[in-house]
Length: 282
Image (tube, rainbow, N blue to C red):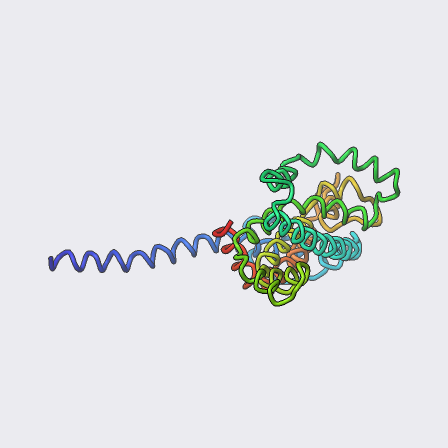
């Protein structure tokens, strides 16, 4: 028995070390590409393909950021992406909350309507982009912010509805019924009781919708041209017949990460709670 106790102690001590080692490998795997992308964005053009590679540039420069934002109109794409993504996210979260509450509380459309809404996300975008393109050309929505906002709202709405549906379905009805007894209408009980309780789930759905809109490329490529183009479509300008502009592409990639990281940090508390509670209760 005396020999078994030290063995168990060594085993217990080795578990945290193994976890730390695994976490260290994971951080290196995730952070190393980010560091190399940042390193490429500030190093001179002559240091891109040198052997051995330049790990720390001796003369950092911001010329690639200036070229990416102004010469290649990356700043215009950034502003368009912010306007379109934020607008589509707000619409998707608002409509998704209303639809999910109706499905969860009133069983609107029967038992299979919620899955039918989710199944719309299974439709490949390439199967509908041509009809949408022709319709947009006819009604004047081609290369406009409104046209892309509508497309992104429809694109992200099924996932928002499904996430919020699982969240509302797991919420107890007693608090809403108590509000009704106190004299609130159905609408007041929804806005004053259900929505505040479901705030973490709404934030989680909104973050997913924003990231989907922010990184979407296919619809933006087909439905925009010179006015409403988004940030992902700017990257195609960095590859030409005479080579690739690695520094400008890396600089714009670093800039494009800032809104997503800032949103994740600001919504971290609600995001984690919304994902865990929605998954368990759903």
